[in-house]
Amino acid sequence: MRPINPSDLGAPKGYSNGWLVPAGSSLLFVAGQIGWNRQQEIVSEKFIDQFRQALENVLAVVREAGGLAEHLTRFTIYVTDKNEYLADLPGLGDAYRQIMGRHFPTMTLVEVQALLEPGAKVEIEATAAIP
Image 1 (tube, rainbow, N blue to C red):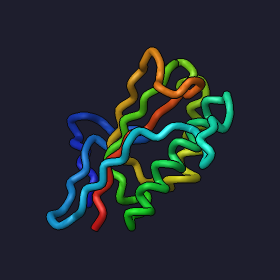
Image 2 (spheres, rainbow, N blue to C red):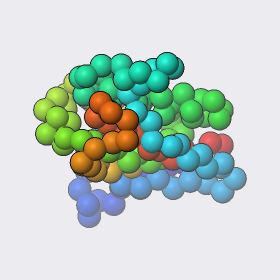
Image 3 (cartoon, rainbow, N blue to C red):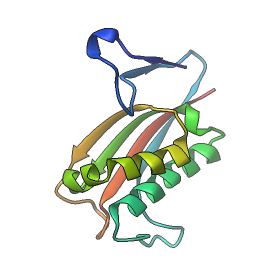
């Protein structure tokens, strides 16, 4: 796989504009994951804690399919309050890098009125290409 970042778009920060996936890779579509634990309890009221857990949950699905963090190609991140997301970008970046390293899939952030699970502040949907 290789990132596609046209110079005409400027340098992306914390994401890639595209990923080219070679033929023969298996595509894994990961359902939206929220910040809950194995007992399906929200781990915290804090946005950053929920973000970290949701990202860990995405990676758990990818690993179960035989993949690694670097096989993720796309994230759609749904948040109930974009200002809460923006309030601690350095902290979110640190949490992200602890889990994902310096691998930056394509990403879209969408603010929504609410998520299905009461108390959930973030949900992450993903696609991975596993060789």
